[in-house]
Length: 125
Image (cartoon, rainbow, N blue to C red):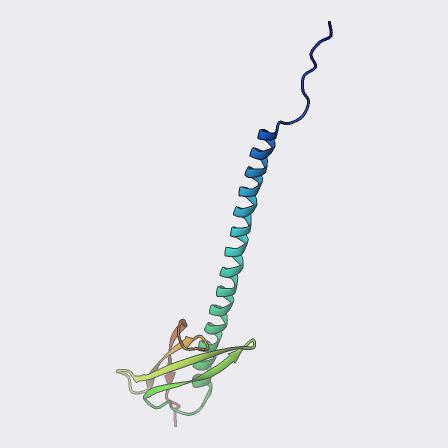
């Protein structure tokens, strides 16, 4: 009598289960990569906006002009990305200083990307 030979290989059910596990793992990996790419783009945008705010404060510190109290706005470009900025210049208890609050928004002006506060000192005569 001949011996019954054991079947070698995977059954269809085992193959389908393995494929389902691989598909779930790949979908999770793609989702993680997408989230990383999206957060990287947002981080870049926030970094550029922070540089715009720092540049605005540096212009006030470097310039010899004493900033007048009030609100100002304008546009700036950083790394070929356009931003809108808004400044509020206000007085302080010390008359030799002015507080400058800079807010940087996206190009459409819908979302605040960075805020920064600083002080300008009155030039000595």
